[in-house]
Length: 192
Ligand SMILES: C[S@@+](CC[C@H](N)C(=O)[O-])C[C@H]1O[C@@H](n2cnc3c(N)ncnc32)[C@H](O)[C@@H]1O
Image (cartoon, rainbow, N blue to C red; front, side):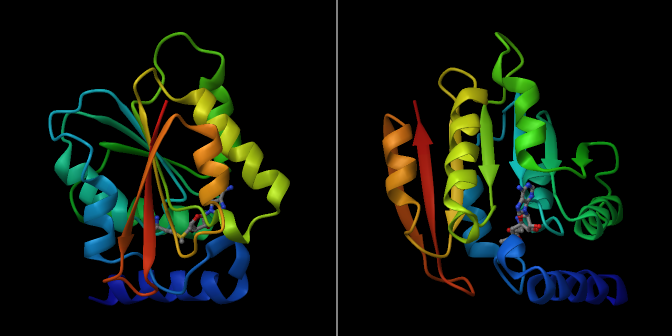
């Protein structure tokens, strides 16, 4: 219980002190997380990359749902990356998920030029709408380039600001609301 409180407080402080980087004051809740991971099959054995893992609200549910997948979660804020690792350890998923304390751009760059070993899913909570426009568009470009053929990019946002940027980069996109979340969100599913 005390651990969970510390985790939530660390997220809250990050939300206050690094507002544009964190994009929220509380981690995503069940309903939004369920929509984010819905397209990922339980039988997935490939690579799943999570961008902006925060304290692990989505990471934990993904690890529980996909025991055979290789999951790499990245988080730019080292305090939140540590909380994410601790949450995974407490839940018994130690060693099942690699948590990288780095920027998404840095992690994805490793996959861009590859022919094999690319992620089947890139799942992101990064607040694109709070980022500088050039950086947000660059991130979307490397997400598209790093995805495996037939792979899916899943992103939640608290506004529709980046809808056009996502739609112009992917052949198929689908947007669904996730209103039972604080703050309410939209989820984008995008494929090439
Ligand atoms: C809205 S929070 C989502 C956290 C978590 N996925 C959840 O759903 O509760 C966005 C997270 O993205 C992280 N972030 C922002 N920019 C990033 C970047 N360029 N690379 C990696 N993480 C980033 C923030 O530090 C923050 O933890």
